[in-house]
Image (cartoon, rainbow, N blue to C red; front, side):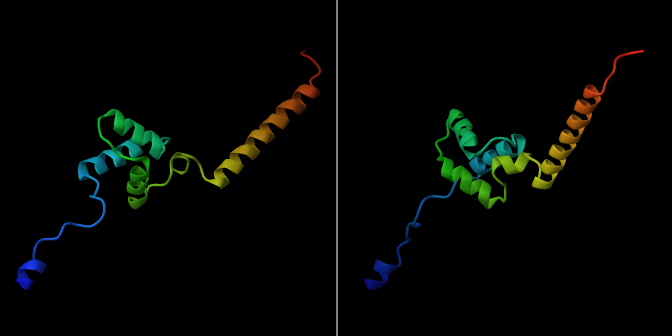
Length: 105
């Protein structure tokens, strides 16, 4: 009797895992739309008829090694600073040319 009491199949503890098809959909949306964050992806999935929390979408992205939206599509800090410096240099050159322009021929 004691053996029968302890040998029944136990239910898994915790939340059920995310459906693999839903996981593939989340990763596909993140890859095809690099500016979307986890909340936007969750909203689109809800519009498709699936019920999932934004935190679950974040966990799936984090587990897959996908960065948050601004880091996925944006440039690095070094690239940003280089671009800003080049724009400032071009603007200063244009302003100086306009200040010292004396008219046409």
